[in-house]
Image (tube, rainbow, N blue to C red; front, side, top):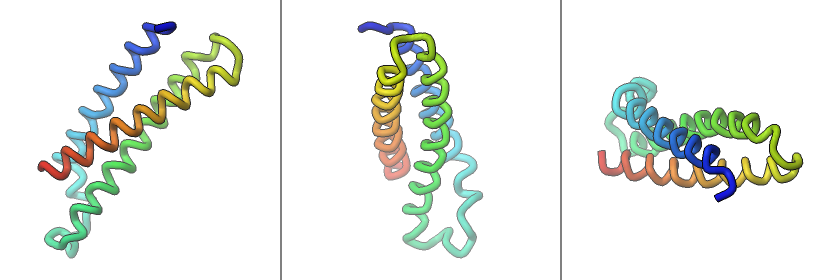
Length: 105
């Protein structure tokens, strides 16, 4: 592990992102769904779409933080490669986590 601080910070980012998404899903996402769709079968798909959109926004913020924290390390191509791989892993973990939370809720 070449960058333990970077890894620890990203694990903390991931925990915060998942926690925020659970809170948003539990209390606020239902407010975004129109009343006419509240009892239809499209409600579940819409909740997943809203959660994934929120996840992408939060992961984009984490990605920007990663790019800034890697600014003084290695060359630009390596920085971008590391940040891209981290972002993809975070996106996969977050989307899977949110789908499981929504489907079980």
